[in-house]
Length: 118
View 1 (spheres, rainbow, N blue to C red):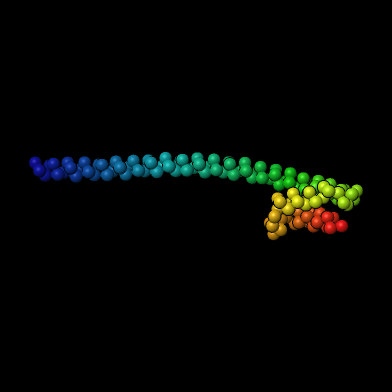
View 2: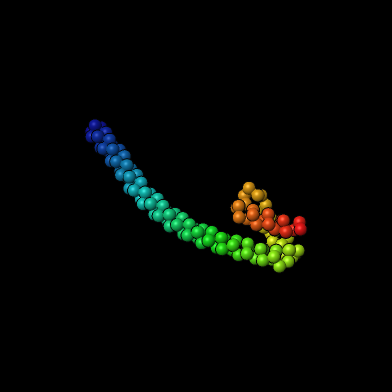
């Protein structure tokens, strides 16, 4: 009788281990599905951010071009205009370190600084 109980106990233990293994496999499959869903959402968000960044970069280029035109016109009409140092100060505050400044803004800052010295 003791042998029968031992056999049944071993069988129960084996079934418990198999059940736990099967549960683990199902949990892993669910986790993979969640990871795939998260990855899809991250990719969609990244694409959305890239579109927004592209729009901002285009707007930045247009606005910077407009600033160049306006500054050149102000310099032509009134080289001593008080607006020129204000623009230079605002650009200096926005881009305090020249190594971080895009080359077109650096050129604009140079033109504004030259107009202040005159």
